[in-house]
Length: 238
Image 1 (cartoon, rainbow, N blue to C red):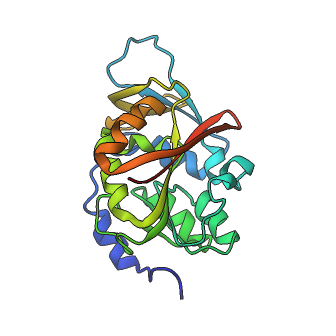
Image 2 (image 1 turned 180 degrees about the vertical axis):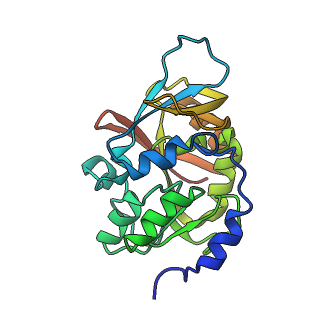
Image 3 (image 1 turned 90 degrees about the vertical axis):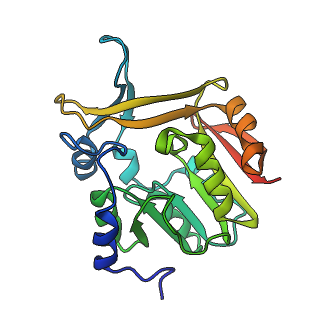
């Protein structure tokens, strides 16, 4: 039996709750298109930035590729169930399952969820703020690939993640390369042909901001490290 029984009816019902104000949704749907073509590059832009401001470049192909050594370090030492928040096509879910762990992914993108489920992964279409299986019992929750930005409010997201964890659970977060970054803004996703998504709230957070916000969520930063050009932190219950 899988970690959670999935039904198309449930996913369709939950899908009706989502507005196109989430990462890459609405408009020309560049995120969904990029998932179907792993060679696509996406650009995260501030909706109200200067016209010539440089966007953040996203390699969409990495989301569908296998987890690399940097990804796998996030799962080191975990023995219980793993929740991947904003899982996309399920790279980290697949990695966790490959290590013999129970794992569930969640994402608000119907395309991402369909791709993950079609490849045999346990993934549901829902927001992290929706009711979740194993509330308060996850051994690990993942916020990687910039997903600390979900909803544009890192404090609320950290508080929600803390509620999902088991008493000895860990939250693994990927951070901005600038430790002083603590920024909330409205963004859009654009593809190489100029197609844009609807505007959505987003955030970027570095280590300093994470340390400051973690305490209010009942968490603390137990460890941080850099690997593969990325920066991560492991948070535990205070």
